[in-house]
Image 1 (cartoon, rainbow, N blue to C red):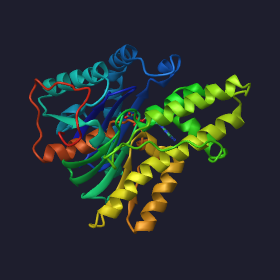
Image 2 (tube, rainbow, N blue to C red):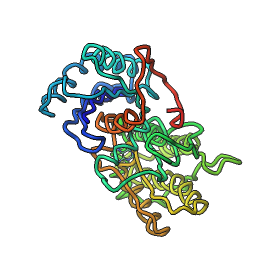
Image 3 (cartoon, rainbow, N blue to C red):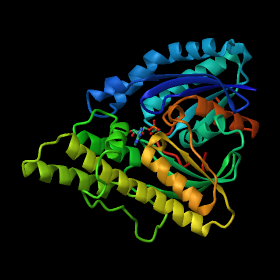
Length: 340
Ligand code: KG4
């Protein structure tokens, strides 16, 4: 079965063709990073307009690379939540028009379910149930994936997402948007004990995350140090990056370890989302999985960030389990992963 996927929830316009949920036939991503870098973050209005300009060409290219014609697809899968509403509406409206004209069913896909499905594209042996931690620019969520379309919520962030915290800390260090990858590289040469940043916790909610206090601590430290005359050079950036990254990793791995201790079923662990590209997080998760004798699945770096192959993969599982939206399908800026 061939699924055509569309993704436009933030600053990537993407289209893809995936076979039977597991085989990538094409995966085209047009990134808007350069447009938003000028402003130090995503400007929603600019994102919507850039999606509108790019989407038809990206879709055409996805069919060209897959070597198929639009008539050959079985369904259109599209990200409908969560994300920037104008950005989502661009992809959703394109997908609806396309599906309507081709007389194909339309399948709504939750963006986080897509991030998790990125793993199905590279790990044939991966099947639910498993524990999933999705860490991206807009979300940080811990869950149990009970089946391909059934999710049990465990914990989420109460404020900033991990990726958002990376990007805001990177900005105060003068690094270009999005700064997560640059902080990752700098953290490898910095001293993680240089600054005592604490992991954020939420009283009475051991599985929930909080990154806003940590982000503020980093911003205040940078301001205090510069007021004392410290120059923001690479050595300073590296120490801040290492100390901050260590606190983020401790926060995420701590929640995961708590769940592993409680969870007696021996479930595998899946890491997903843009921040899953972080080398320090990947290493820490590998160590944790080893300690508890669990298998760990992570997407390759090129499938960690937003793409449409992950949407088409999840779309396949939603479609075979009966999902088929009406033509009044709408987009939602927020929606829980368990709602679907
Ligand atoms: O998954 P994604 O493309 O966006 C959402 O779906 O929200 O993730 C983008 C985020 C950005 O915040 C970016 O800085 C972060 O992922 N990121 C990283 C790394 N690579 C990308 N954060 C930390 N370390 C990295 N290596």
